[in-house]
Image (cartoon, rainbow, N blue to C red):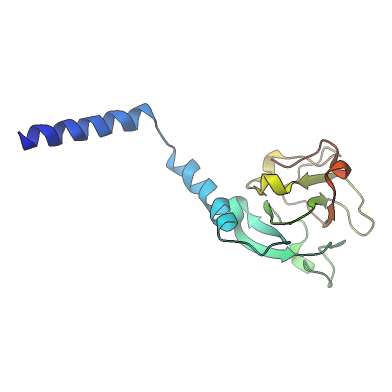
Length: 153
């Protein structure tokens, strides 16, 4: 009788698994940014990553940085035009990212505090229509009205 109960349990579990399939690749991909978020990032900072799913830490910044390619600020030199995923652990503001430098030029996209992160920027566009992936050159902290309707997903 125990074998019958065990067999029925295994069959029920298998049926449940096929009724609600979960892509292990999708679950693993999302886990990295969730892990970064739930790993308690430093409050008040934004983070940028070289690869999708918050892998390949590029840096973090509490303040704004008008040129990720120069030798000052939180992001420097080789950091420009490399971000593929971003995280906002800000406490009061949103982060506005630009594909231009110095005077907040070029197209922009924002990441809301309530969104937490954008795990893959390859399907996002700056306000200018340019793809965001590997094209961020600067960022600043702003209030949500500054972002209009151009938000990272």
